Every structure is written in C-alpha cells, then in structure tokens.
Image 1 (cartoon, helix red, strand yellow):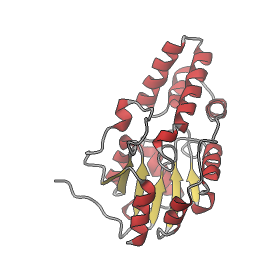
Image 2 (cartoon, rainbow, N blue to C red):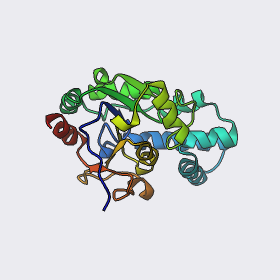
Image 3 (tube, helix red, strand yellow):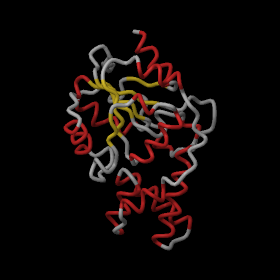
Image 4 (tube, rainbow, N blue to C red):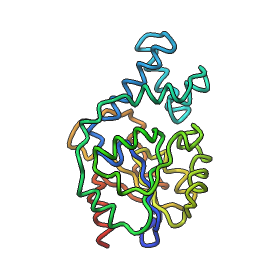
Length: 230
C-alpha cells in the first residue's frame, strides 16, 4: 500500500491550467486540438488523417506537438502558439467558488503550463481567477521544453524559488506528476467528473492508481475548499 502525502506542510500551490482549473467537459482544449491539427496539416501539406497521426505522435513523444514540429520541421514557437491559441474562450464561465477556495490556501499560488501566458491570461479572465495567482511559468519561460521534461520542473523551481518538499502540484495528466512526485511534491490528479462526455486520448485518462499520484479528485473546487477548511 502506497504512502499518501498530505497538505499540512504546504506553502506553495502549483496548478496546471487546461483541464485542471476548468472542467474537462468544457472541451476548450478540443478547440486547441483542432487548431493544432490545422497547423500541422498546413505546414506539412498532408491529409487531415496524416496530420492527426503526426500531431498525436509528437504529443506523446515530445510532450507537446509544438516541440515535435520545432524539432522535426523547424517551426517557430511564436507562429505556432499564436495560431493554436486563437480560440473562442466563451465556453468558460466564472468560478467564484474556486476563487474563494484558492484564496484560503496558505502561501503562494503558481501556474505551471505548457501553454502561453497569453492563453493563461484569457482563461483566468474568463474564470474570474486572475487575481488569485502570484505568477505564471509558461512554455516560453520553460525555454520551449514542455512538461514532463525534468529540466522544466527544475527551471520552474529555481525561477520561483520553490521548495518541492513544501509544494503541491495539481495536474490533469498523470505523466506530468511523475517528476514532481520524485522531487518530493504532494501530487493531485484532476480527472473528469463523469457527468459529460470528454474528448481525450485513452492514455491521457490513465494513472489514477499510480504510485506517484497522492490524491485524485473529480471536483477541484470541492477538494480545495476542503483543504482550506482543514
């Protein structure tokens, strides 16, 4: 039986953005996913089916499709990010309950994302959470090396002077919790609540029982509220 890490010692709360701070079933990422496919198709001049195959292959192997496109085909990050994040953020709704729960957590709240700061700003504005976070570490700050690369987490920790032994990480992809757990962070996997259909790859929904996942929740707002009340 695995030992589950607790939260009493935590003074830094680290959150992924997409499918973590808003519900999976909003399927906002599905819009980004479609834009990525369009970008790959246009850049490589291949069929939609081949573009999809390449997109998912790079996502799995490189951490992001962008990293694969940069490595294999010389794509510029600025061009890619500007295109794929050109989406409609209106499906996102304000979540004052989550804001209140985050506000009650003791210490700093940071965002660690494979997306861009521009995307983060738009998402947080729609959710009404912009004032609740102290800093954002995005793919540019990571020097375009996405999670789950170990050096990305280390650069994040160094940049924001975070003690991993006093930190918690919230993520929707279990594989992105492997390194945080190895570093000593308390890890929380945020999963779909099962109420609505979600568009995800099978591997993206795996890992709930992994040794590097300390906690699993399908209701982040309720989970955080419980911590703040503790």
